[in-house]
Amino acid sequence: MHVKNVDDIESEVLESGSGVSRQMLIGLDEGPNFSMRKLVIEPGGGIPAHTSGAEHEQYVLGGTARVGIGDQSSASINFALARQSR
Image (tube, rainbow, N blue to C red; front, side, top):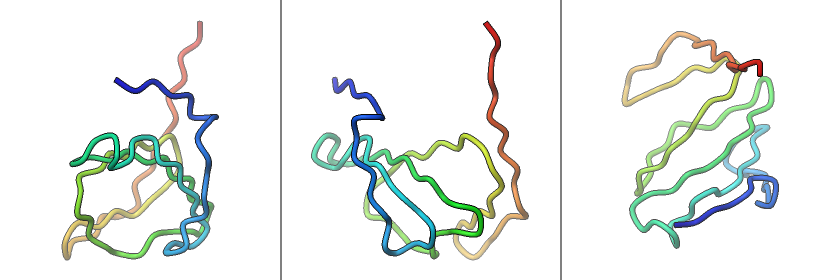
């Protein structure tokens, strides 16, 4: 098992995207068939359509996005960051 603090993981600009930075939370060296990335996409930024050779997990904290799968594209989806009061 790997335990990490996201603040300790280096962020890099994703050259294939526009206004996108990436942190590799779980790389292919830790899970040969799976990777997990944290992406920060600035307003107006995005990633071109692409395919990937490995499964990967992405979670959305907030914002609005258009998601495409195959030839289908969704309408804009609003993602709201849910916060619990303590």
